Amino acid sequence: MVHLLSAVKLKPSVSAAAFAEMIRQLSASLKQQRLLSTTRPIGKRFPHPIMDTDEADLDTFFIMSFESRTQLEAAVAHMTEPEALSTDHHRQLWNQLDSYRFTCWED
Image (tube, rainbow, N blue to C red; front, side, top):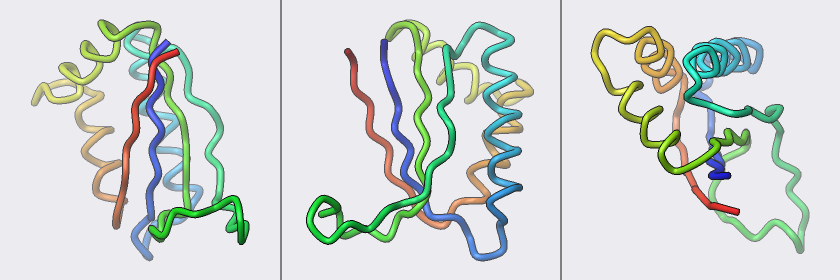
């Protein structure tokens, strides 16, 4: 499995509910096309004084998982196609972000 951790800070005008709905729509579109395995629930940052050492002000997190690198690359290619429905969801999602950091890993 390949996992993508998205750590983001939403624009002040974006509600957590609107962001969650856009993640749901993007995930459903990708799953329907077999370009995504799972999306875990969205979490909020817990600023522990010892265990949380990241100085970035990112406060919203979610993980998307892909069956393989091939599936991940196919999802990326699909989301960058100008006419794909997932591209529109992805573009709308990007417009909700103030700042972000992405990390991929494989297990």
